[in-house]
Length: 317
View: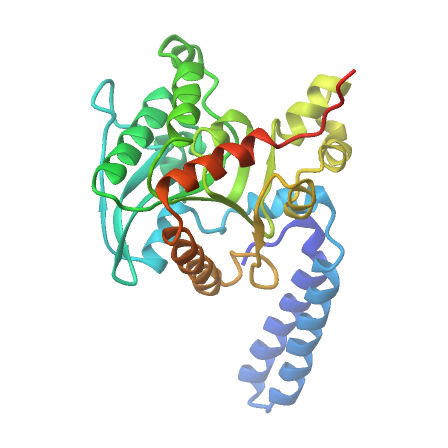
C-alpha cells in the first residue's frame, strides 16, 4: 500500500501490524488477539484522519497512484465493453477512451479520460490530458450513442486539456467549445461524474449533462492549486492556501449548486477498495438513468440548458 504524507499515523500502525504478524509466524506464538486490536486501532485512526481532511489533502487523494481510473470503473461495473477509436480526422487520442458497454443488461456509451497505471502508460495516455482529437472522438461517440438512442455516461479525470502548441494549432479551444454546444442538445440522457481531477475546460469538454456528480474525494475547478499559486504568488509553495481559496472540493461544489450530488467513497478513498467504489458508483448510475429515462427528451434538453444557464452568482448594476 502507498500512503500519502498525512496518512503517516495509519502507515505507522500498518508497519507495526506487519512486524507483529511476522514475529508471530517466526515464534509460533498466537498473536491473533493483538492483531485484532491493531486492526481496530487502524480503523479508528483512519476514521479520525479522514473526518478532518483539508482541501489540499482531498486533492492529494484524487491523484493517488492507486486510485481507479475510467477503464477500471468500466471493467468493474460493466460487461461486454467494446472500445471505439479515432476521431475520423487526425488520430486516436489515448488520453480519451470510450465505447459501448452493458450496465446490468442496458447498453450505455461510456466516455472518459484515462491516466496511465505505470510510467510507460502515463506517457502513452499523456497523463489524461486530451488533445483536440480526443474531444472530437468523444463527440463522435456521443453522436453515435444519440443515433442508436443509448444513454451516455462520462467519467472525468484530467489535470486539464493538453496545453501544447500542436494542440492549439489543431484547435483545442474550438474542439472543447463544440462539445459544450453539442452536448447541451443531445436527446439521450447524459450523466457526468468527476472521479478524480476535474480541471478547467479539459473537464468541462465532456462535463455537460443532465446530472453532474462528484466522487467524495475529487475536485472540480477552473485551475489546479499549483498553477493558481504560481500565478498569484509566483511559486508553488502556496498550493495548500490556493486549494482552500478555490473551494474546489465536492462539498463546496455541491453547496454552490455546480454539481447535482456527491457520491460517497469507501473510507480512505476509492483506491482502498476499488470494487466497493465501483459498486457504489454503479448503483448511483442505475438509479439516475432510471429517473432520466422517464423524462421526455425535449424537456430534458430544456432542463439541461436552464441548469447551466442559472449557474453562478452575479449582480446587475
